[in-house]
Length: 300
Image 1 (cartoon, one colour):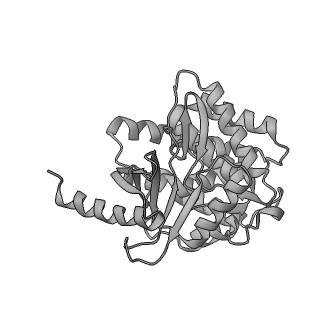
Image 2 (cartoon, one colour):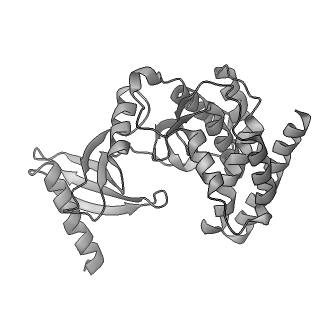
Image 3 (cartoon, one colour):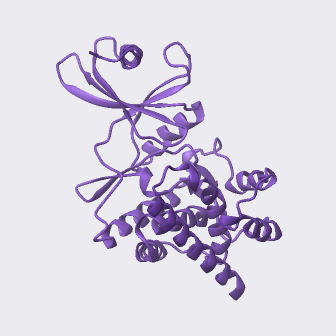
């Protein structure tokens, strides 16, 4: 017997399928782990000719996000095809987008990190090399403005476990940073959970709701911290080296962007439901990451 909550959910998603194609039929719907606060549901449908197809329903979403996904796919980036946007509120309570379902998992063998790090760096460099004059990214916010707002909205309770006070003081003294690199398309949340792999190959970069325009080092710094947390120092260094080999940018401000990445992520660590050993390991790696960023600033 299907639980009532699931039955109601299936009824709603049957309506979603009908809105896309009245001749198709929903076979099943199941929730996928998505980003916070996103809700991601996979659908398996049967087309009129009998072929089976899977799709993704992601909510909430904005019209700008949908337009961006259309443009990213049009320029050949490894992103899901956006099929349909519904902002009416007639079926689901929040606006949603229907996307291509890409077979893959956000994980790879940690025993051999060299090839995955090469692919991650290559994909990030490709994102940063997108010609924004042809993409029309006027709908994207500027990363510097986003971070300035984050600085103004200073938390009343500073997390000293994450050295937040010292980080904020350093960034406040240096902001705004001198523009040393041209602004590029940024993913905004480049980490292993937003990357899909299949048979050892990177097949998609997902979850573009934090996309922005800004210094490529913002993405690099975020990626460095996330690779460190997930796979350790060697993986982080290989990711960085591979990206450096593919690009020609000024790295002077990397320590500041690393502090920004930490300020954005570390205070939320307690919300991630980590077990005790994982949280302890992440705190240790976090302390190392901050220490090396401050050491680089001391040299400059």
